[in-house]
Amino acid sequence: MSFSHPFPATTPPISITESGRRITQLDLTELQWWPVVPSLGHSSMQATYEADTQELSAVTEMAATSLAGIHDQDCVEITVRERAIREDWDVPGRPHLFYARLDEKETRWLGVVQQLGARKALRTFKDEWFEADWGRGAERKICDDGRYQRQPDGTYRTTGGRGIGAGTYDVVIGSRTFHCLRAWDTFGSPPSEHAELAEAFIEEGGRVVLYRQYRGRQMGRGETDWAVKYPDNSKIVIDGCVYVHCNCTGRAHDLITNTAIGVDLPR
Image (cartoon, rainbow, N blue to C red):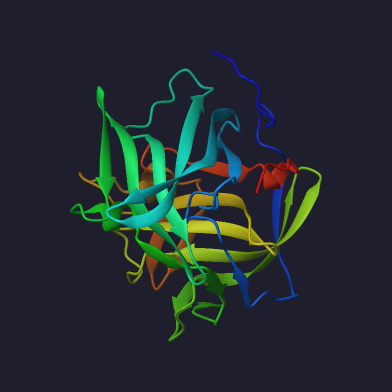
């Protein structure tokens, strides 16, 4: 069923150019990595595009609609509505509600209601594997302290830095240009070809405009080598580990937000 949304039917032109005007840190009040601020009244939208065909697959709306509590922890309830555009779009475990909070230092996941088969299930921070799937507390301060050092061959090696910032870039999406800090998130673990990598471009005001997921080439069950399956997909190499642009659907997507297309929503 069709519905009204502001995103174009195909991916707007995207270009990413390294900038000499460096951003060393910024304040990210959005959940990592769902672009909504866990504060009452805030709302956002993001569009998921196929990287190969550039067609729009889904639009997700998020809105912090009410105050709530999970295990005596104050938070907000965020409604999540994912609208499929492609007929074959179906991601198992899609979320319906987030429970999260924002304080002076971090954003924090407290609970998620997901569609699991024919039923909805609430998982909270007290459940096993919740933190592994959703994270728990994430620092608002995103800094680039030189953790990722580019090598002459275009690969990267890690240093003693701890920040997830990975360079400063000018990102052009359609007719709009954003001065962004790039973030590479390995979710607290060293680089590994059996794990995932999140890549986010965050504009100076602390809003994600472009997001991509990468899989370590050996990630997942079976013997799939994602670098062999998708030889033409973008790749990132960190400490010799090859990450391939694709996600849990087995396909590669570019996610852009309402900020990226210049649509303001309540904050």
